Length: 118
Image 1 (cartoon, rainbow, N blue to C red):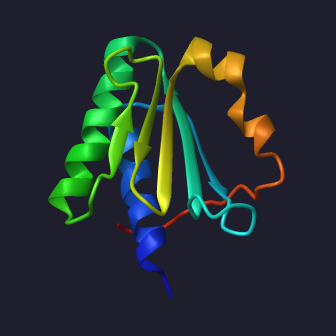
Image 2: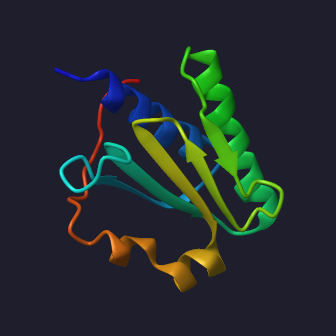
């Protein structure tokens, strides 16, 4: 059975993919943190693409009745955090992703594959 949080995570992954986000990674942090259930990490190759990915995630969340609690860093387009409450999306510029290597910081989190329809 697919939970509401999984559905939201799938929606964010699909929105990022629709804007050609690269190396989309979904980490289940539910047992490691109270921040969220999932971290989604992806990157774009330039600031404009990062902003397009973020805008699509925001638009699809709103369109499907989800609340976007906040977006940080969108103006610079280097590392943008999209807070969807139980799902937090990190959209990086490729260079920033390589530098910060957030996947390493959360290496205890299992990587999950979300399949099926949104």
